Length: 212
Image 1: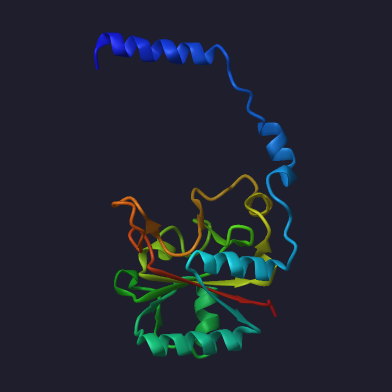
Image 2: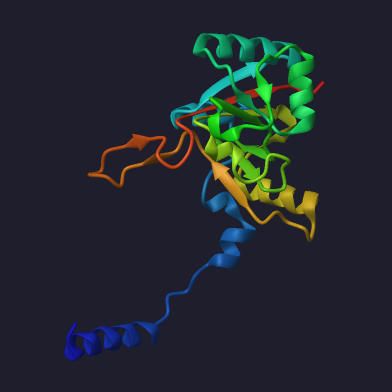
């Protein structure tokens, strides 16, 4: 780049900075109603609709027994022999209900991983995950298939609601990683063609159930 071109660019930047555009951050944070309208339907339905639009696979279970029955059927159909789960409470519940082929030692070669989540965000169809969970940073993105187990009392409407919930839960010890997962990993960087499963799971399942 020539010195003249560089000087022209810098001059235009300086001129723009002399007339700053006001950013209404305070209004947008304090009153989100101007950005979108509140949900007119139940959060379970809102989440399911938006999650499936993003190629997520959603299933509702009445209780943990039904959850395990659906998981076992899925594992049998897919011929999974290695299901990874390192969250002790979740692993013990699933194993206690009869789900087979669960281990917590071999994430690298597993066919699917199972985790809990922090929250479900209905408006965006997203699962809020964090490094504060027992599964840590890698389980939800490393396995080729991620299965998330969530309860109806974890549903919130918007991202702001979920972040406020995390603040209440962790206070000054917020997890170092907080992420939103909205369906399987995807990118359109290559010739604007959508490719699924490039930097994360190729399939994402969410099983939602009532807490007993």
